[in-house]
Image 1 (cartoon, rainbow, N blue to C red):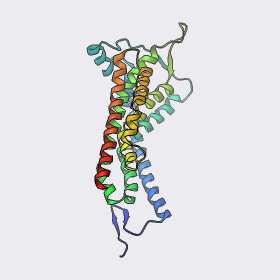
Image 2: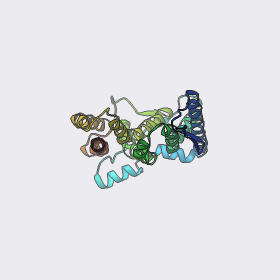
Image 3: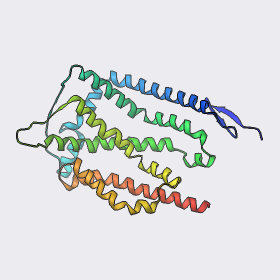
Image 4: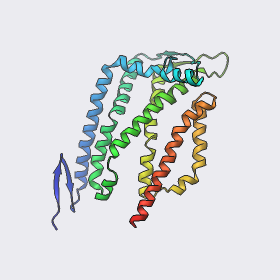
Length: 272
């Protein structure tokens, strides 16, 4: 049988004939170039929209932020929001932080496209059955990522800022923050949270290749609950309601991952 080779949208898809190592490198190079170009374009847009970007980044530290207002009005928690001064220690820090925050926002907003480029590179190497099983993965991963970012921005960030700004080691201390530290803190609480919310997708693929099982995840459920509530206690003020608001979505993700892995196992058993 002759090798089946066809081109669709600039991507070479091959039947029996495999691509050489150099062909793979060339394909990867163009995916990386397009991804970097997308980040560059969105980064320029974020850099030019400085007023909007700063307004978004600094909003969680004010009592008027929507999370603080809702919790204070309806749940009577987190009503006192300690204020602190943000300072610059180095000449040019404003400019460098502006650049870094623009890149951070560009990566966040281009994530669906970046993941799509990654998927286009990986997809030709999968079997037809694997492609069918992964149908819609770009959309699902993008939605989970943005849910994680929103959760980090609207829930984790305001709680963490409120707690740390009001914490004092001694009566003689006064809390201030450098601009670089504050923006880095917001970045740490939003972008990584987006990746944490990809847990169900990771569990699906690990379950598919047999690295984890639903029984294993159930066995370590108690450990996961303890870790999640410890995390909630660290980044929230010392009240039960705040810890639950942090822990519940993470526990839900863990339980969802168990269900997904269990479905993968049942499907594998029915096909065997």
